[in-house]
Length: 324
Image 1 (spheres, rainbow, N blue to C red):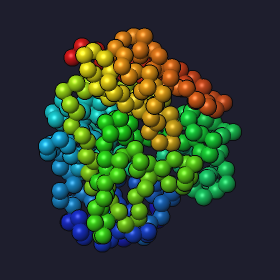
Image 2: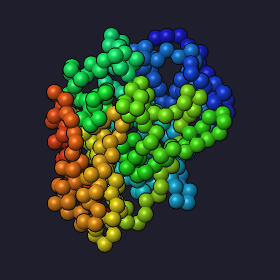
Image 3: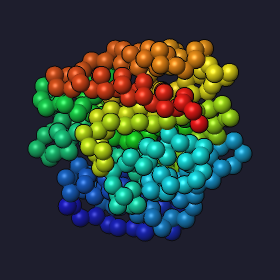
Image 4: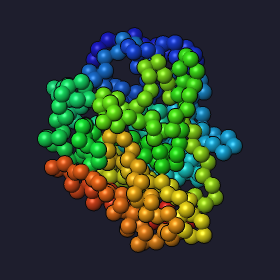
């Protein structure tokens, strides 16, 4: 592991002063420790955020639910406000890793973690994402890789919570020494076709402070489902978050986001269009599931994921639209 200076700022202002191109912020540290050991990151400074006051707040204010970046995944999974108002997010948090990991991991760290592609994570492979000239997954072992927009880099986005939050239309609150800004969470993530070496749009001197979720209205229903090789402690093979607005038994608006499908949380817009104005019955869910995987381009070993994504979309829609 490379050597570095460790800082424990107590305030946001102190933390922001310490950030820059050679510094890395640390929240729970789950992903960061792996990256340091694998020498994916070799910072001069690690800025520990766990002592910064105010970054672990979780509350509702007017029409917005505010989730601090240092809220733990375990708290998201158990919090009554999240479970009642944002059930898809609560379920996504509950499906993250193991209880020990959820107790340490934070929302901000989960959203901004780096891809888990085995070629990217191994020092021996100088892949495109690390500045090389080859995506080894394209012609290599790729059974867990992307089935959408995978022609440049075939990693999948590793965050469960991101899938749910994008479906809810959440916004990220970002701070630097020059002030704060908000960005739609869906737009925070960077596709490989735009910049293969970046996963998000945060500058080196910026911090993710919180995520703001519009409080769902009375006709809103949501669900998150995840399929993996094992029931617990596993990365998803396929997942889907759905947020539906129902009016008189018909769907007036749908948001469907797929996980483990692409390098970013994948918005299934064709599937959303399938549902508008229709009652949410088995036929509508079936049509939306098929539309969700339209345009998929599976690799040599991951064609099975197309069917999984279709099924998990259909099941999530029926779970969201079922009896309360």
